[in-house]
Image (cartoon, rainbow, N blue to C red; front, side):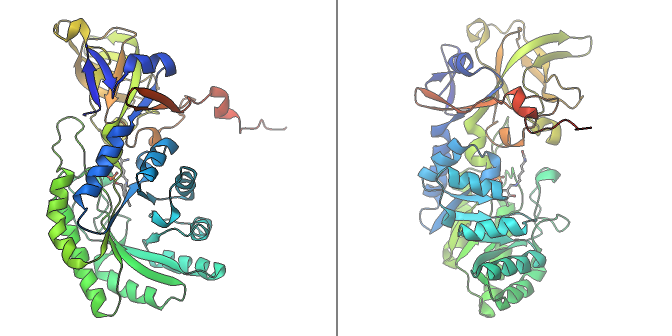
Length: 420
Ligand code: LLP
């Protein structure tokens, strides 16, 4: 993580000391580096510079307005899956024409709103969605730009919960049905076929599944051409993995090098929908050690963040690194280091953030969970009536609150006592 480093044994993000951040905003707190986000975005655009391309950042990974705004300013498009995400993109200054709308369950009002905003493309996942989009477009007297999300039946070799391109997943239209569905789409009065789409999963560390999926999609592009259906773009989804602890994912450069020869022959504009790879390692979650509870079998460090703040460890057994905000004993002496389970205060055994981590801890210490920029805050909840964390962005030597800590009153402000 180039943006994250120790300076005189004190953790810094860019030029901002983490102690300073904690002093201003408290814990638990998410902190994001603006430069780190932009660096990955830039790596994508540079690696595919030889092709017409559009990077549509997957908003679900981190939908804070400041994050979206930074990417919008850099020229990014956006991959959205709800009306709410579209509203965020527009509020952050994103351009509707660069938005692609994914997801298996778009509703009438989602589609209506997106058509009225003139988004770039609907990634359609079923025949019933296709007819619904046609109906809404007809009612609005508009033409809906669409691509079909094809399920290439490729094994992404990732965690089963985040694998999406297999036959028995709910996503997309089966590869062998796609041609027929495209022909049906071509007959619909208010549908404008513009592309083809696939997304096979998330946190992929190898390039082969991407190449296999691309081959299957290219096959379809050719079959479509033969029946007179011409496309403008091919969307390869997101999914490039990141290093959390010791993973060795392919770099964006290697990813591009594997795909470019095949893509350049096609002559279509290429879309990508990266989420995690853009923001994961640009973010950390800061949490304070509240209680140390060594037991005969295990040492528990109870911290002020919990599974409601960061559910990835509980939900996917995800392992994310935990580092101290200040290196103990000038970073030299490792005495006092013990294995600790870093757990939250929620009443669930599954409420852990990390297990068996060698750390030297005292109450009051602040820890940083790294790789927390993606699917961290966006998956957080209010379980146990816990307000959601604050979010901060840093750039160079500046820090700014980009979402204030939720108040406890806000948690029940919309609730009403039974008037009996
Ligand atoms: N496009 C589509 C259609 C998607 O469904 C996703 C993610 C992406 C793009 C972005 O994929 P990425 O580049 O971020 O891998 N909550 C899980 C990850 C769920 C991913 C869902 N879809 C986690 O924390 O690991």
